[in-house]
Length: 296
Image (cartoon, helix red, strand yellow):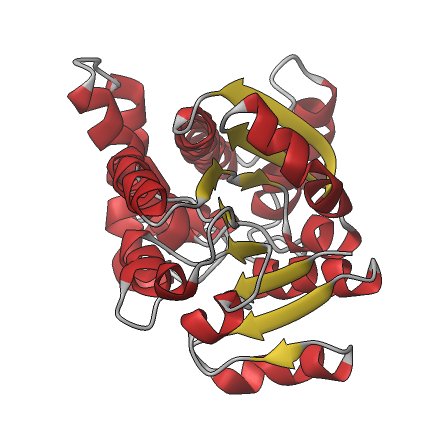
């Protein structure tokens, strides 16, 4: 069994860390708010008071934090995990961060003599807790082979895209595509409400139609009835960040994303009112923008 440091115990991180403990790994956890470590400590985790403490003696350190700033802090600060890294340690960044930051972090890892694994994930908190995430990996094949026994505990599928940065490239594209789906289904639902379409029939039509996907189906089941989804998904604020990172990546590669930019505009507008809510809150933003709020 491996010695693993785990940084960040939000909705996703605490489920992932719990899976590693249940699989028999020796896990040391750290979170900015230390009280979030209590439940993992009850499962047998050790608790570190800073990221360096979680990395000390670890074979692998995994991070699941919110954004570039948080990632930089847990890895590259004076008390960050890299400051305590032993040669050959595996550094696994599961956070959704920018492509630019991946490059910077991978270079810092190399300078410390450790192996960087670009490893954002697909799946909701329930999948994190059940060990059924999809991992989007960018790293050398031999490094992935070493890490695979641990990563398999967290996942139902490991997709190796290639070199460092490729996993994050796809994750940002995927989350931008999700923003397009959500904005489109919210606009469509708003129009359906104005046209007095029966909510249950609307759901059935979308579910059985050619535009049905896991994402649009989850959204329409909530939006048709003018409520938030009862399945926890990505918060509006996090998807805004991910889509913004994707826009920057596209610009750096001289590629226009006009549809993505339109969807991003809705997410940017949503930040002031529903940043902490699930994607399904986008309907509220669009209806208020258009001056029409349907009856509950």
